[in-house]
Amino acid sequence: MEPHLNQEVINTAQAHEGPIETDAVIVGAGPVGLFQVFELGLLEIKAHVIDSLAYAGGQCVELYPDKPIYDIPAVPVCTGQELTDNLLKQIEPFGATFHFGQEVTTVQKQDDGRFYVETSKGTRFLTKTIFIAAGVGAFQPRTLKVEGLDAFEGSQLFYRVKSPNDFAGKNLVIVGGGDSALDWALDFVKESPHKAESVILIHRRDGFKAAPANVAKMKELCDAYEMQFIVGQVTGYEEKDGQLTGAKVTGADGVTRVVPLDVLLVFFGLSPKLGPIAQWGLDIERKQLKVDTEKFSTSVPGIFAVGDINIYPGKKKLILSGFHECALAAFGAVSIIFPEKKVFLQYTTTSPKLHKVLGVETPVFD
Image 1: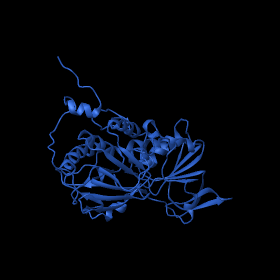
Image 2: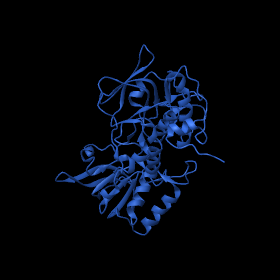
Image 3: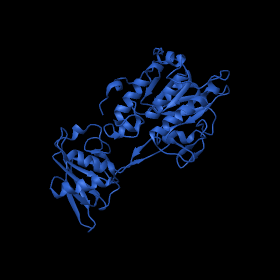
Image 4: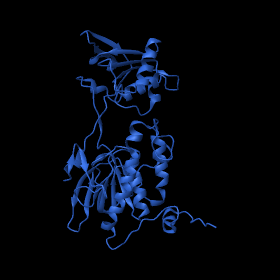
């Protein structure tokens, strides 16, 4: 994926001797993690943000940067990339520091109440609070289990599409029966700069876990001989001179046929893994972090969890729900960061203090 707009910034962190002392560390730079920066900023709390990806946006940018999102309040439609770019613009006044391309490996409670945090790149922090906004955790694509096939990963075997133009004019075999497989199959068939030479979709059965309209469209295109659908499973492959030349597909009839290809795209979904978070001593339920609904604290005071990684009665995995959780988590952190300070709810529409924090002028009404 090519960076867009504000994504030109990679790491905003500077070299630092010793642990970085801060009020807040946010783990995850997806939409919810970015909005957590905003809610903390309104309360004059600066944050450091850590993400394993090389850019902001999380799953929205990694998995569907150009797919439309329709349920962001007051935004009729936007892509994952547009949402990320707008959030980055919104949080500019708060000067968050980003640490991309690294994963939090260590979290230890200190005698003074702070947390020692260390990343896979050796970046260290002493922070009063931690906000986990890591989505479904360290998500990994489910792979195609064919011995020896992994040698072609990154050259002719792919589990996600970052740049569609890389596949223009190629003979594509797409494996899977979910929305991603159908979406990309249809996308590579239509007239566009990244139109493929041919598209063959393979799924183990004739039923799909995908939007019915897309399944119908796929079958129309097959009837028109613009693409092909085969029921079967990839059980082997053929190669020549170190290049993948075909997939061996075993059908329901038990017969194995060779399907020629230039590129094999596999969409079996993602397998969420909490990764190191599972070792932090937090209460976990079904690979998610249990929180209260007053301030979205985990079982460890000072560590909050917002967005898809948390679970509570009535939880809905929606971006807008994550935004709401960020606001309450930020207020919940104030008593830890500023124990002597009384904080009252103020409105960005009318508060001169918030206007100063945001760097905007207070309007004068007649």
